[in-house]
Amino acid sequence: MAIARRIDAETVSLEIQNSIDAVDAYFKRRELNRTYRKYELDPQAAEQRHQERLKRNVEELYQKTLQSDVTRTLNWLLQELAGPSLAYQYSSEHQKLLNSKLDQRLSPEDLKLIRLTDGGGKIKTLVFTANDGKVLDVAWPFALQAPQFAVYRKQFENARDTLLHEAESRSEISYESRQRLRESVVAIMVALEAAYPRDARRGDGFSRYASYYASKRFLQGLWGSVQRATTVKDLSVFSGRLRFQGDSLVALLQHMYGSGLEFATPEHGGEGVYRKLFHGMRNLYIHVGMEKSETAATGYDSADSRAH
Image 1 (cartoon, one colour):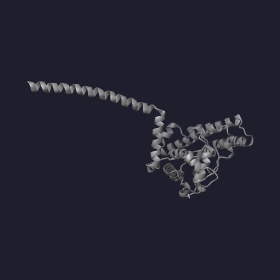
Image 2: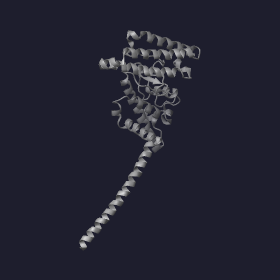
Image 3: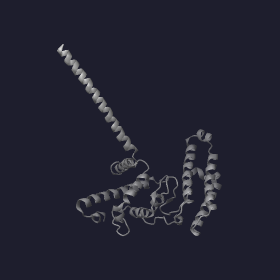
Image 4: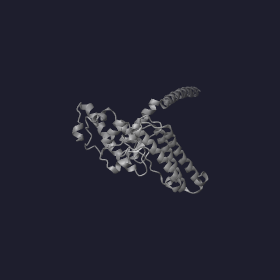
């Protein structure tokens, strides 16, 4: 009987302890969940985690990064390299990295495929190639090159040329010119929908749908550029002043840093040049990181000895 009472007492004790542990675990889980939700909902914490992920992708997982569009990563690197440390090094007064072994050469063919933007927003942006700086200079997709769209292409090009002429010669753009340019893009959009009705898009196979979808995406981007062009206050962007006239990566970064530009998504065929840019910018980023570490440890700036 004594043994039975002892076992019964131990059982009760274990049940009580288990209950206490369960309650303790419950409140600990609640606290952890509260902390996790706070972290998730905190914009600053979320941004910090996002930056850490981008940093790791560049430093460690760069091969995976190269498997997709690297435009976003290039702009992250641009911001990192535009910080105080590199801004000093590739500023026109010091130019420690300009023409150094780390400065990647860019051919005229490369520059034709590098697309830049004034960063007006995710939707409203002016996009142009680095080698000419011409805004609203469109390369029509294959489907929109069809003869049935010729009149609409001509309407857009005439409206665009009128707007650019006004911006350059009169330093102002009339309401009529702005409206005519907007209407020309809307007309192409309507013509595209008429040429590719929904039922036909679904029944004529993937090729026809792909042509329609590529053209629609192009026109959406063109509409954003037109929206930006007809509302921008700094009309000097129409003068070609944003054209890059150098021949190296560091010079391009100087130009973009000084003009407030970003990389735009490459057109089909330009992905290889963007991967080349990624390798060159990553090398600069790693180099600057090493220099900052050495400077902090030794107090000696060794950039000249390594860069040249």
